[in-house]
Length: 346
Image 1 (spheres, rainbow, N blue to C red):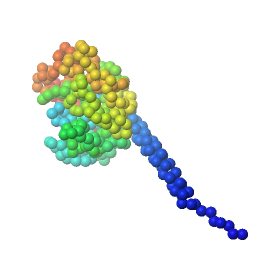
Image 2 (cartoon, helix red, strand yellow):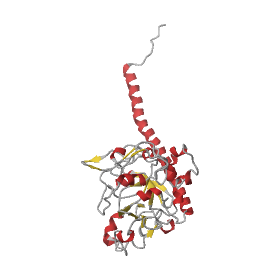
Image 3 (cartoon, rainbow, N blue to C red):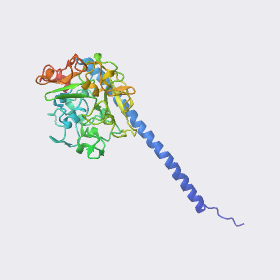
Image 4 (cartoon, helix red, strand yellow):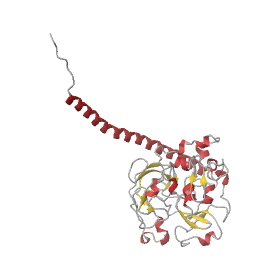
């Protein structure tokens, strides 16, 4: 008896191929999303561990600093964005791994004689203890798995992302400055001094609302709030940015109480002089707040983190109002080295 051989028809084959293609289209984004979710969890774990290290540092520091005081703070000036860019990250992390391009300097930030090297970053010894030269070039505790650096975004002729030198955009922060996470160092000042209204420069026990006060975080969060040097009461985000973990206007942050969580950069409180009569009107713009987060430490007064000639008299704002009211000076004296410089060593 002859039997007809069964086989797929062309239509059946095309249907199978179409079904497989449809399944791939459905599953790939899901798998990518799961992969990114895993990276976000690793990032939050990094921040949580840093919170514990910050607390240990504060408990051992003679002035109970809430944020590790790096020697690099002495070089922090408002007039030099490139140095600000490095200082924001130099409280912890490895040596830089790529040539750093800026106006005044171009080269690797790995020389042990520089203030930017791993051995001068105070939080390192609280996470890694002692470490050798080879280990100083690989410190994954300071690396966000999704770190892609500052994006190359421009708006018209003015850069929207202005917290990094143009030549350094698109380079992972872990490679550029050795640390994926930026400090929340809101400050102002002038020649010879720097005045901060965030956690930097304060005793941990003096801070209030620690569960909302940002200490460090993924850097795009801060650029989502506006451009550098334009923190005004009416400033709004210039563009909807996507964070490293593929979420619009959202990044991971560490808070002063040691907690770490994903946070939206949308502001829901814009301070007005009438709302805070005890705040100098020229300082109102430093209020940066949203649902469950804040960048300023009001009502804790501001702090001088870098001294200079006639520092007290040359500081802005009314002495009897926040943030200058009862400010604390964490320097030994105007123009002197930072107190407890031993914490900035190996």
